[in-house]
Image 1 (cartoon, rainbow, N blue to C red):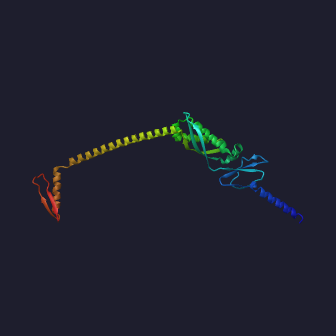
Image 2 (image 1 turned 90 degrees about the vertical axis):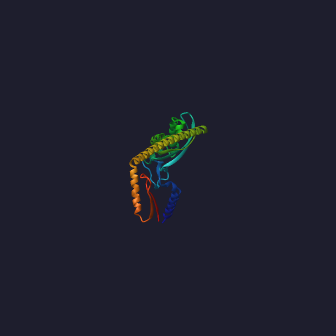
Image 3 (image 1 turned 45 degrees about the vertical axis):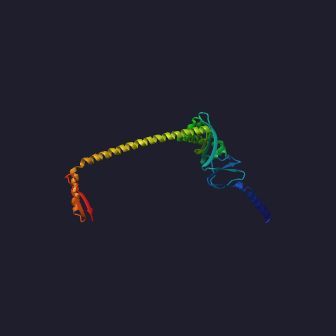
Length: 269
C-alpha cells in the first residue's frame, strides 16, 4: 500500500501528459485527405508510407502533415503578351490534385505550399509562352485545339512534380478597350456577312424548289389535258343524267340545243 501514492502520482502525470499532448498524439485525418509523417528523431520525412483517413496515433515529438488529395481549384490572374506585344489580362482556373502514391516525395521536395511554388508558376509560364505565339484575335477567340495544347503542356510539366493537372479553364480575358471594340466589330461584321450568305443560298434553293414544282404542275396538266376529250365529257354527263333520273327527288332536265352541249340538271324536293 506504500506504493499506492506513487502509482496515483504516476497515473496523474500520465493523464496530464496525454491531455497536454492529445492533439500531437491522436491525429484525425478527414475524408479525402492523407497524412505524411515527419520523424524528428529518425529518418525525417517518411516517403514510402501514406497515412490513411481516420484516427492515427503517433509520438508527440513527431509531426503529421495533412494533404488534401481531392480535385482542388485555384484561380489565378495574370498578364500575358500577345505576338504583337499587346498586354492582355486573363483569369484562369486551375484544377489539380496531388498524386496519392507520391505525396511523401512531393512533401519532401516541394512542401505543403506546392500550389504557389509549383502549380501556379508552371501554368503561368506555359500560358505566357503559348500566348506569345498567338495574335490578339486568336487569343480572344481561342481554338479548342490551342486550349487543349496548353492543358496538355501543363499536365506533362506537372507530372514531373508529382501533381496532376486536370484542366486549365480560361475564366476571363480583358483586352485594351479600343482593341476589344475593334475585335467585336470585326466578329459582328463577319457574322452579318455569313448571315447574308446563308440567306442567298436559302433563296436560291427556294427558287429551284419553286421551279421544280412548277414543272411538275405543268407536266401534270399536260397529261390530264391529253387524256380528257369531248366525247368523255359527254359520256360522263349522260351517266350523271341517268343516275339523277333514278333518284326519288323531283328534278328538271333541260337538254341543250346543240349536240355538243351538256344537259342542265336542276334538282328539288
